[in-house]
Image 1 (cartoon, rainbow, N blue to C red):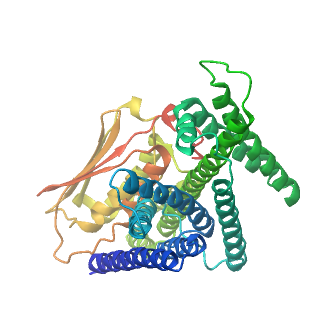
Image 2: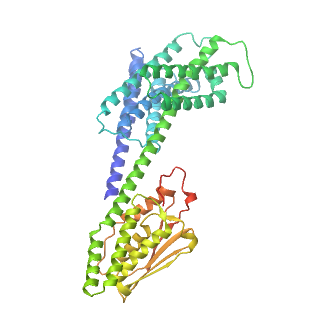
Image 3: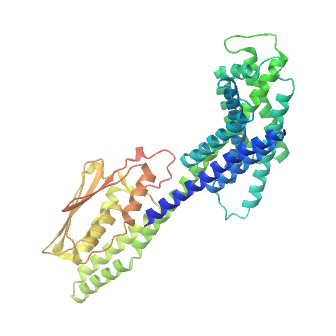
Length: 486
């Protein structure tokens, strides 16, 4: 039922996105037709519609406000370029002119932008908003105002450039072709964008806001002028002098636009990587908290204490004082192990097996001849590492989910090939089935993934249950892993 609800929710979301994208594509088309019929500019109206569409898609996909603002800017810039390119293709290649040319071009462009943005968010950017944050509204307002201001400045800048005689001497297509033909400048722009954003985050985030904006402005102009100069000089293959000031201005204009897009894309990639790393850290903390909770439950497990005290009471009543004393020592040894390794994520297999032996010896007093545990592990494997309480938990699960009696003994074999540890037991189904939550194995699996990126293997046959735990060599623990080892 849960999966059905999830599928229905996903289908509903796709339907909603479809209505948004298709609806705004039609609105763009109708707006273009209306503005051309009235002989007024459609620039502002189309810009506003594109911003609203992008914002609705981001809100529907629960994107963070920072990414939403960046997407709004990127979609408008890329949309302008695609729309202009489509109109040129329709006019020159297909002879398609008049009012229908811009209308059809903006319809196709809007559909293309909307579905591309939706696909990108679904595939790469699962960074969601934190609406519970009290400062969310203030942050939203600042980012949205910044995005709107940047868009209108760019649209004014582009419109003014094409309405003047900036490209009087050279055709804009030729200038763009010259710029993109030089692959060095694109690599340079990407490298400079990454470097300047790294400097900003690393050293300038605590500066006064005016100084930060001054740095951003100067860095942006410098990183735009350098590629334009490289193309003007025809580097690295040639060195053309003297400079043509008009041609340099045209290249600078193209470089500024490309630089804006590259910086925004670098920001998006950096933001997504950072957010995913943060989410991964939070997930690891949550997994650790869950695992510590499981270990805490083991320490104060009422069922375990109840059975242990009953066994101890029986030994005392039978006058078996030495057995009772040995039982108490094993019980205290188990709790000492739990306490000593409470904060560790990895322990030596030797210590884990000693802990497991204490648990088995206690269980044998309870089950007598019904429990047969055989440990066959070579000495070379004893110095490797496992997750704390993992082996003991597997033995406990075997006794919990199987009948244990002298007539139907439960046989558990713990063995190793030096690379992994295998815990296998025969299946003795109980008459009353104990429901398994799987929590213990789930978090053992997760602890292995977090500590070393390795997984456990679980196999169930008709008459046997097998769990294989990786043995971790200390030298193979990933650098930077914060696992505490004994």
